[in-house]
Amino acid sequence: MPELIEGLAESLTELIGQHHVPGAVLAIAQGDQCQIVHGGVANLNSDLPVTADTLFQIGSITKLYTATLALQMVDKGLLRLDQPVVGILPEFRLEDKEASDQITLAHLLSHTSGMDGDLLIDAGRGDDRFARFVDGMAQAPSVLPFALPKGAPFSYANAAFAVVALMIEQVSGLGWDKALRSLLIRPLRTKSFSTLPEQAMRYATAIGHLGTSADTMVVSPVAFLSPANAAAGSYPMARAEDVVAFARMHLGLGVGEDGTRILSEASAREMQKVRVACPKDLRVEALGLGFMKWSWGTSGWAQNPDVWGHDGATIGQASWLRVHEPSGTIFVLLTNGGDGKGMVRKLLGKVFMPLCGVTPPPALLPDLTCRPDLSALCGSYGKSSETLHVVEVDGALEVSHVPAPGFALLAPGAPLRLVPLRDDLFITQKPGLSEPVTYHFMKLEGDTRPSVLHTNVQAYRRQDG
Image 1 (cartoon, helix red, strand yellow):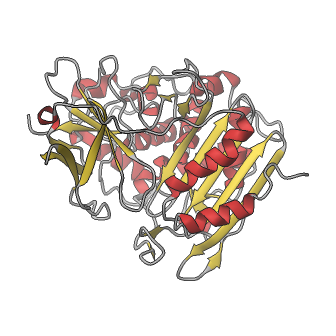
Image 2 (cartoon, helix red, strand yellow):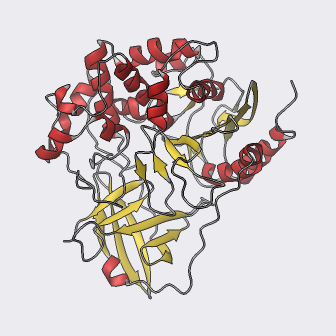
Image 3 (cartoon, one colour):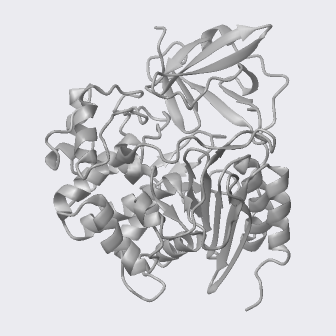
């Protein structure tokens, strides 16, 4: 079978060097064809080379698997999207009791519950980890009001998927790991997909790396994030080919590559339906149930963006899934450190978009004529994992990220200078990363000045009144 893209392996190897990525696997699929290339090493300490069969942590791409499991429960009549969580989990409580009683499965899957998504709850590694996590949420604050006003952002919530996992366990009678394996992994025939380290040890695995250059790159001192966040992406590992099989099932509206019906067509379409339309120039244009969506190549925002997928990030590993539905093109990139964001942007522009016949989104460029009211934007904005301090220095904004106790790996760096795109939207360049990061200051209903700072798909609530 001819290659989809000539010279793809050489391009990947070149970009691995340019972006200081220790190792990577790239899969491109269209129709019946699937081209997989790889390069670099899985572990700088061992120099074990990456192959097509190397398992990487897929991070938050896992959320798509958990969302699919939840929709399988809907297909069986065991869950409803509009059903309040407390109808299944009476013990579910947040600091805001009224919100606790109203939050539904659909809110959890579309990141619109308003809950703080990075809760640090020591729930252990046992079979009861999701139950213990949910019990520990009782005092969890919200970063957004539950009843979001029109135009307000979503706030990406890892914690929501621990709740979804417990709902799945409650109605299926299976642990989340077993449910995933029996209802998704086996029907997809992706047996190397692993939800536990002892499963992954049967295969060659990649470890994460920290650092911004070849000279500073080291193996991460922590191999995995909290086991209680497994359903959100802290533990699962997979080959690029495994993720392609999962994406093909969703392209086939719930039918696997061998013709097995895994998810109903109605539920597959429901997952793709736009639930949240995001403000212009944010990292994500729209959200479905689990899926992130983009309208590349479309003039203006599309009512049904036809590029969908998800990103994933763990300690020193990052992953990307993009699917262009009209052309049936699938893109999967798995990396274990370095400037993966810069690398993926180049690969999407060079490989994915030409195959799809779409154009890359325009680069975000500063508006040198913009004169925002900086004093109204200054202040402290926070959530459980960190606080962002925004101050005015020499006529410009600077932001400092200060991690909360328990989030030491989010080491505070030097203050970042923010450059305006418009009165409420700024960009900055983080050291070691070639892609800009956006900071969106937002007013909610009744605000006289911004009360929310939205960056990296998460909302931070103003803390200084």
